[in-house]
Image (cartoon, rainbow, N blue to C red; front, side):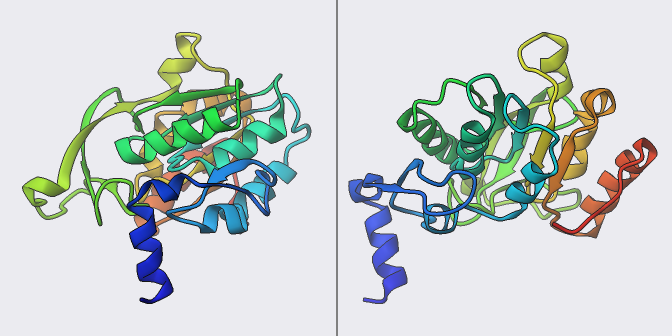
Length: 231
């Protein structure tokens, strides 16, 4: 069997929960699980988060929001970097990914993390999410405007939350850093956070998935004197 097939086989068994240590990045040294998506512990996730953290005046005690946390490699890294006086707020709507995210937070005994099993949006409610390669995939996404009707087994419904409402109710603190990776819906996520962004002017590490998403985010942020810089 090829290594990729062997990995998929192991990922479907309890062996996927074998504990390893993250080798690189902000989460270096944290406890992690072997499979799937071993890139997380081998490489520490994408490097844009480290670049974003480096732009903060003070990392310890900072507040970080993680939009599209998936298994939580950036959530764990941010929590370790900001320390117990800081706060990390993580959003993940996919139930399979959220279960592994929660496990990784418990595994590392992180008390400064607040988790929401929800998609970040510009309103509170319920929205349809399309599973690509099954739940837990990094490619699952909220339905795009004009997207073809999904197969019945491919769509499930999740909660959506506008982070500004959580700030207003005192459940979370305003951010110093926001990591955005939400498969094409980043503009809606920014719109649901715009009051907090206007108040605290956080660094935003934004992973774009197409020109429409990027232009939507820029139209909201450029009036606040944000500029785009490649990380």
